Image (cartoon, rainbow, N blue to C red; front, side, top):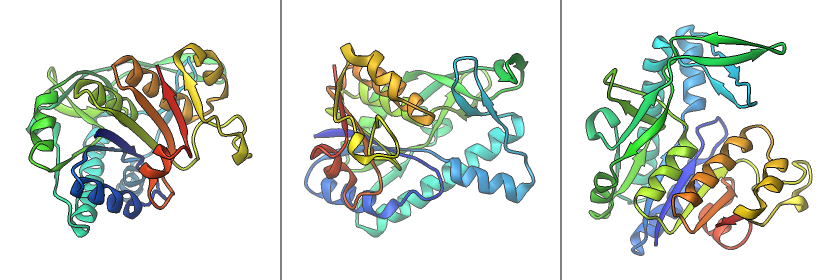
Length: 269
């Protein structure tokens, strides 16, 4: 099996269950790419360095972090720091892993979106100097080269912008989808702190267990908050050729097995 798993970077995410499971799966011959977020470490760094955290809401309703020039450097530091923590945890379970810095490995590229739009009190305004972007290219051969040496690649939510020559902030869920499509993954698992896509977040029994591209309008109706962005990544993964995509609970003892066993939202073309 060749899979991609994404774990968030928010405070409260437990690394040990997933890292233990990944090490066991790698020992059994499975190949997994690990993509991670960095929000919790970034928030802590901003607080430590006295940098204001600025969240913006786009006209389409998506909420994201504004990353200026100062924040870009901090975000890279946060992402690589969290990746190092992940690597150390994997090492502790006996798995071989390798952090991928896009400025060095040059495995993922993005186009910086310098100007973004923000909605405040019903009015749209322009923000300049943004250092976030969208993935434009994945060099799957470099990721597969790491995998084929029985090493787990650890991909941070960063990509190289060829114009500025710097690693910029990208969405980790969409990075997982783009990577999975490029390496022809069999499965993608996006982990968060909820069981999956829910009809009612307060009712565990309201978990939507299956969905297809033909049902997408219905699925989007139930996606709230950050789940909206995760659902975008799921669609991109399916359209890129990944046969099965899961939205699953990262708090389970063996989160991948938990997802593949049916305790998650399984989306197919």
